[in-house]
Image (cartoon, rainbow over all chains, first blue to last red; front, side, top):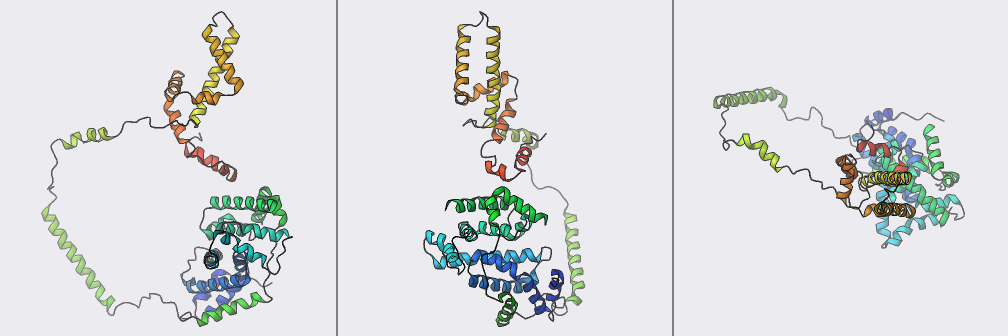
Length: 183
Length: 241
């Protein structure tokens, strides 16, 4: 496995017009999978995740010159990915639905339409349970449970205090457990 | 690695069920998808007008023509103007043109103090659900217990009719465990009188009672979620020492 290039080096190369594209390709390669899965778990469908991922990388290109290197590129990218996903979800729900019950079912139905969906498998039931959470709590749960992100980093990504994140994650776990056991 | 273990043990304590399910990925992507992403993004960037233009930044050479040549002269001109202004001010002097009524400053402290509201006992003890209530309850329980103890111990002819009534009531309260209900019937002033008679610091009890009302305290859940919550509350009320 080849060694991942250092972010500082990549940012330096990005600032140089002759190495800009190559550096950006490296940045995308380095983070695309982690970011894709984070987005995918929030927006569910592959096509939607692909749209959000590409749009976010285009936004990152436009703003990378203004990126303040006192924060980590990784957490900055996660922040943009989360915000783009939540904003995408908000717009999609507005377009597709009219009533509150539609809002609640929107992503559950999307999950059920996945070609691999299997209602008998606990992993899929877990995904259905996650869809019952409010959007931001969904992001908190996914970042902790799937991405195993420390609260300190998550606090930078979601711009929320560590205490609030901890409480939110604990509530999410309890709600999900309740869903799995009782529904 | 430690963080991963922390996350796992946190989940174990919260929900062994979720830990058992594991964080296996249920979704899939088309074959070769990740190999194509960088090229796709760059392709889109090429279609965007201006995406590859050099970033426009303010450079030192982006100043009006002749700016640096004129700068020193302009600065000296401003310094000279300010000096002239200062000279004028020096001549004017610092005589105060305003006056105040006679004796104004002598009376000012008294006038200000007169406007400061007296420390009134505005802290409500209703409903009696505060720490104050429990402190008083504890004190009264002790008193009640002691009274009963002495009465039973002495068991002398001094046990008058009144004592028997008190004793019967006390036994009833203890038997029914209705101490809180009885306490609720006491007025604030009765409690204060009692505390004063017992040599207790009424003000301290009132302040703590107000500070520790239900609104000022965190939700019970927070104590469970955050180990530091209790420390924070104690620090807030300066009760750590």
